[in-house]
Length: 362
Image (tube, rainbow, N blue to C red; front, side, top):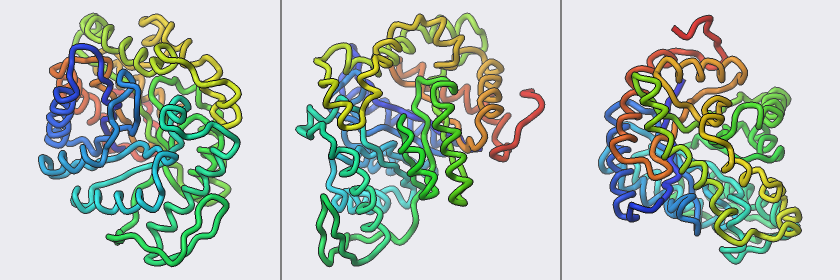
């Protein structure tokens, strides 16, 4: 079982971008010292309370100079806003600058981004994305190649530098097609934070079933916001502000800005963003978020119990990722969570074989 940290780099009032990035670099350095396997960040644009992580590869190149073992993961490159050939080259360079410690995934990005980026919300969005995925992997797997598709035409091209190794790849999102694609290619999936198991149960069942059909192995990264303290009441009190800020930050593009047109979202296959789910999420009381497993808050024993429950119902989990620095959380609090989780929770699961279920958390 692997353990990782995941950050959206949410910028809430009270911090500058410079301060936030400095804190994140210190948190990555501390995570390396503690023995976390990976530090993952989203790629996202235009909405600061959701994320200012507009250039993950630059962050990781800087972090690699301060660390020795921890791996780095962009989760995910928002492919509609990249030329796949150029992104392939950037991935290869990032792998060099991180000393071979780079992992990554691709996705369509959130449905509120296209209009801000000048990308049309139309019926071509999904097929264009899927062809871009194919082209990206053609570029990374073939030193010289041509591609003749509906949206991309490449003749006798190659990327430099050409990567000499295979990468651990992820997809993420809420659509069925995301999980089918991952299973077909043998890629991992990253379960979006904020959602309890029941919200994605059908998609995860589909992923495991398609993996069985294609002879691939499920590789599921389970991510949750997490806050710990030796005293449960202290944990609940400390986490309230940043956890509710985290939830609100994820919903803020639909709460603070003009919503994209519903017709466009549906045409482009972004129906999730027209369903009101994110807006409703921001209205859930803090106590309910904790009780119904949207977030993990409590003692190390409480968190271990939640992880065990997740492993019981979700075969194929190979990695637990926690979010500890969102919603304007103070730097000291993020460090505290990193320390407590790795000292008192991770050791209980470190030797667990993925798919193996323990009879007792203790």
